[in-house]
Length: 439
Image 1: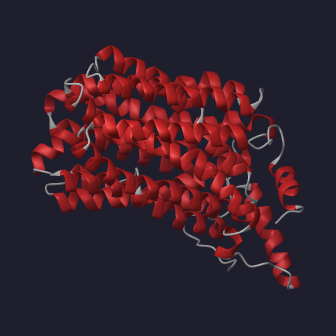
Image 2 (image 1 turned 180 degrees about the vertical axis):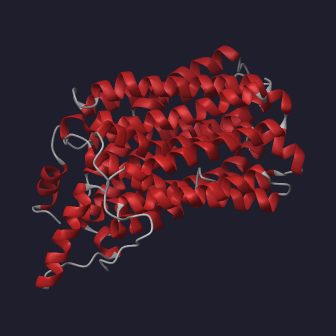
């Protein structure tokens, strides 16, 4: 690795700002990430009508959007750059790329323009997520790490909630309203980009770079290769995180991108009511993060907390699958599903994954390792999105929903059985426990 760093946006660090302000600014990546996913979902039927999209087009948009493959590739690339040049470098530049991609979507007049915009946005949010999640964990106090990491999940829920409320308010304008919703994300990204100039670089990363430089000079630096992640403790950690998050995310990703569309087609409700229900889902998600995960994640037994909250996710999909099988999906059933899965979404697999992903890998390659797990999760989701459209068309929604029951059950069991004991420990303490020394 070279020690030379780009000069334009990463000069001397400004005066440090409070940890919570850093957390909030870093977490805004999640706002524009999830907001971009749900903005596409909220207007999917409108774009389908305007551009005469078929199932292949819908599958490609879902698979290569910021919900899946392009975000996966962005996370892998961004994670590597993040470890080499710093956390701040990535989350400064990726927002510029995000705004370019969003502009293509806002002014799209054909499918290629829309599709390319989705890909660019996905690449940028994938890179930004690895940088922001890593930075939040590294600057958070050890005894409040779950509380700080939870802020990213709050932002992840607020983005879609705002997007869906705007979609309801602007619903009478049709596709123009959806373009305005996408445009608001450009404004948020611009404001966030300007505010981030004041943020300092991660102290953990700077210390790791100094240690790495010293080891290089001594000739004892162990090079990081793919083999580093394909055996031993790193490989077991990746398998664990994949079981916890990537499998569960097949159900959550389907909700994020397809459920408004499904509510309209299967539930027989209007686009506005569908978006209103989904806004409620994300509000419940944010509240669950604040009052369950952030309040209890550093205070109670994490294994027990994960198991109980994971069960709510299973129960949510059992309810929806059973209602679909009996052909009695009603607004009441949808509300019940939204409450159960909203609580699960806000306080279980996703926030725990973010927390564990930052805790279980060494600082030296934390962002890249996190990028690998995020890459794996979004690639699997991209493939599933294509499969889901086919299963839903051929086998019906009941068959497709049955898969979600299996996904959430598997994830619940994996996290409950293999949850690590890291609560209250510093990242350096966890690193020494797992690896024997600082890497």
